[in-house]
Length: 137
View: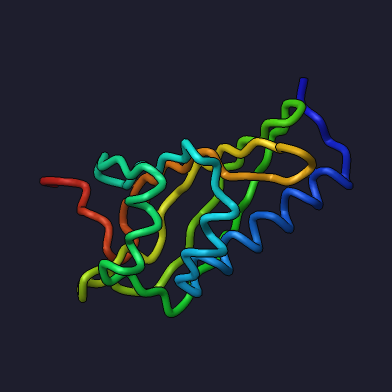
């Protein structure tokens, strides 16, 4: 059953803000505390990053000048939340520009009262800067 409790929803929104701020800052220590041990991130072209590889992105040249989430819609099922959002970013990965907008599905769980991100899956938004084209016309 989906929960619509404003307190819980507000707590989760605050969690997402904290997580996005840690990502933008490239703060691997803070990000580590916000992820489950078995976290997995899936990139927009299908690559899979377990938690250690996700955290290593900062050391491998990922830099954000700007990062925020918009169009966030959350469904909550007890201690699990599934959010879809638009990931708005400006930055570089290994010196190359990253897509400025992707869709993201975020899966989180609440453990001992604290939210932890268990997974994220990205998808390109066709027609946005940095996304591949739609193919031949």
